[in-house]
Length: 142
Image: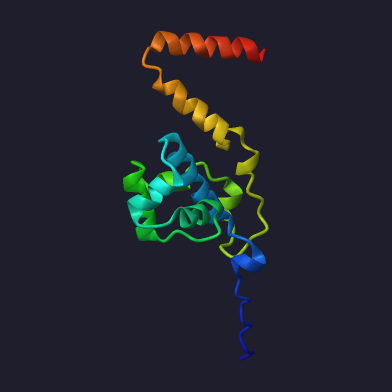
Protein backbone atom coordinates (compact mmCIF):
# COMPACT_ATOMS: atom_id res chain seq x y z
CA UNK A 1 0.00 0.00 0.00
CA UNK A 2 1.54 3.38 -1.00
CA UNK A 3 2.17 5.86 1.80
CA UNK A 4 -0.57 8.44 2.28
CA UNK A 5 0.31 11.91 1.15
CA UNK A 6 0.25 14.34 4.07
CA UNK A 7 -2.02 17.34 3.55
CA UNK A 8 -0.38 20.74 3.82
CA UNK A 9 -1.66 22.58 6.89
CA UNK A 10 -3.24 25.83 5.78
CA UNK A 11 -2.83 28.93 7.90
CA UNK A 12 -4.50 32.31 7.76
CA UNK A 13 -1.12 34.05 7.91
CA UNK A 14 0.20 32.23 4.81
CA UNK A 15 -2.93 31.30 2.89
CA UNK A 16 -5.49 33.91 3.93
CA UNK A 17 -8.83 33.31 5.61
CA UNK A 18 -11.22 30.63 4.42
CA UNK A 19 -14.11 32.03 2.36
CA UNK A 20 -16.74 30.61 4.73
CA UNK A 21 -15.08 32.37 7.68
CA UNK A 22 -15.09 35.65 5.76
CA UNK A 23 -18.78 35.20 4.91
CA UNK A 24 -19.83 34.36 8.48
CA UNK A 25 -17.78 37.28 9.80
CA UNK A 26 -19.37 39.67 7.34
CA UNK A 27 -22.83 38.53 8.50
CA UNK A 28 -21.83 39.22 12.11
CA UNK A 29 -20.69 42.71 11.06
CA UNK A 30 -23.87 43.33 9.06
CA UNK A 31 -26.20 42.42 11.91
CA UNK A 32 -24.10 44.24 14.52
CA UNK A 33 -24.11 47.40 12.43
CA UNK A 34 -27.84 47.22 11.71
CA UNK A 35 -28.46 47.03 15.45
CA UNK A 36 -26.19 50.03 16.05
CA UNK A 37 -23.88 47.95 18.24
CA UNK A 38 -20.17 48.77 18.26
CA UNK A 39 -17.44 46.14 18.08
CA UNK A 40 -16.60 47.09 21.64
CA UNK A 41 -20.22 46.62 22.72
CA UNK A 42 -20.47 43.19 21.13
CA UNK A 43 -17.12 42.27 22.63
CA UNK A 44 -18.23 43.26 26.13
CA UNK A 45 -21.42 41.21 25.73
CA UNK A 46 -19.39 38.05 25.05
CA UNK A 47 -16.29 38.85 27.11
CA UNK A 48 -13.93 39.71 24.24
CA UNK A 49 -11.96 42.74 23.11
CA UNK A 50 -13.02 44.76 20.09
CA UNK A 51 -9.84 43.55 18.37
CA UNK A 52 -11.05 39.95 18.64
CA UNK A 53 -14.42 40.97 17.17
CA UNK A 54 -12.53 42.66 14.29
CA UNK A 55 -10.65 39.42 13.61
CA UNK A 56 -13.89 37.43 13.59
CA UNK A 57 -15.56 39.93 11.26
CA UNK A 58 -12.64 39.82 8.79
CA UNK A 59 -12.51 36.03 8.89
CA UNK A 60 -8.97 36.12 10.26
CA UNK A 61 -10.16 34.00 13.21
CA UNK A 62 -12.72 31.24 12.90
CA UNK A 63 -15.86 31.47 15.01
CA UNK A 64 -16.54 28.31 17.00
CA UNK A 65 -20.02 26.87 17.39
CA UNK A 66 -20.53 28.03 20.99
CA UNK A 67 -19.36 31.56 20.14
CA UNK A 68 -21.62 31.65 17.07
CA UNK A 69 -24.52 30.62 19.30
CA UNK A 70 -23.65 33.47 21.72
CA UNK A 71 -23.56 35.94 18.81
CA UNK A 72 -26.95 34.70 17.59
CA UNK A 73 -28.50 35.34 21.01
CA UNK A 74 -26.96 38.79 21.41
CA UNK A 75 -27.72 39.85 17.82
CA UNK A 76 -31.23 38.35 18.03
CA UNK A 77 -30.99 36.06 14.99
CA UNK A 78 -31.04 32.33 14.35
CA UNK A 79 -27.62 30.67 13.94
CA UNK A 80 -28.60 29.94 10.33
CA UNK A 81 -28.63 33.71 9.66
CA UNK A 82 -24.82 33.69 9.55
CA UNK A 83 -24.88 31.23 6.63
CA UNK A 84 -27.64 32.89 4.60
CA UNK A 85 -26.96 34.54 1.25
CA UNK A 86 -23.90 32.41 0.71
CA UNK A 87 -23.02 32.01 -2.95
CA UNK A 88 -23.47 28.56 -4.49
CA UNK A 89 -19.71 28.45 -5.17
CA UNK A 90 -19.02 28.96 -1.51
CA UNK A 91 -21.58 26.33 -0.44
CA UNK A 92 -20.09 23.63 -2.61
CA UNK A 93 -16.42 24.51 -2.13
CA UNK A 94 -14.02 22.12 -0.55
CA UNK A 95 -13.29 23.28 3.00
CA UNK A 96 -9.59 23.57 2.14
CA UNK A 97 -10.12 25.61 -1.05
CA UNK A 98 -9.21 29.25 -0.56
CA UNK A 99 -9.25 30.28 -4.20
CA UNK A 100 -12.90 31.30 -4.27
CA UNK A 101 -13.43 35.04 -4.44
CA UNK A 102 -15.61 36.47 -1.76
CA UNK A 103 -17.11 39.64 -3.11
CA UNK A 104 -19.00 40.95 -0.09
CA UNK A 105 -16.78 44.06 -0.17
CA UNK A 106 -18.11 44.83 -3.67
CA UNK A 107 -21.71 44.65 -2.48
CA UNK A 108 -23.12 48.11 -1.67
CA UNK A 109 -25.46 46.46 0.82
CA UNK A 110 -22.48 45.51 2.97
CA UNK A 111 -21.12 49.07 3.10
CA UNK A 112 -21.25 50.78 6.49
CA UNK A 113 -22.85 53.87 4.89
CA UNK A 114 -25.71 51.74 3.56
CA UNK A 115 -26.24 50.00 6.87
CA UNK A 116 -26.30 53.28 8.77
CA UNK A 117 -28.75 54.74 6.25
CA UNK A 118 -31.11 51.77 6.58
CA UNK A 119 -30.89 51.91 10.35
CA UNK A 120 -31.66 55.66 10.38
CA UNK A 121 -34.51 55.14 7.90
CA UNK A 122 -36.25 52.72 10.25
CA UNK A 123 -35.80 55.09 13.18
CA UNK A 124 -38.33 57.36 11.43
CA UNK A 125 -41.54 56.41 13.22
CA UNK A 126 -43.96 57.74 10.62
CA UNK A 127 -44.59 55.37 7.73
CA UNK A 128 -45.82 58.36 5.69
CA UNK A 129 -42.50 60.18 6.19
CA UNK A 130 -40.51 57.04 5.36
CA UNK A 131 -42.50 56.59 2.14
CA UNK A 132 -41.94 60.25 1.20
CA UNK A 133 -38.20 59.89 1.83
CA UNK A 134 -38.09 56.70 -0.21
CA UNK A 135 -39.89 58.39 -3.12
CA UNK A 136 -37.52 61.36 -2.97
CA UNK A 137 -34.43 59.11 -3.04
CA UNK A 138 -35.81 57.14 -5.98
CA UNK A 139 -36.44 60.40 -7.85
CA UNK A 140 -32.92 61.64 -7.12
CA UNK A 141 -31.43 58.34 -8.32
CA UNK A 142 -33.08 58.58 -11.75
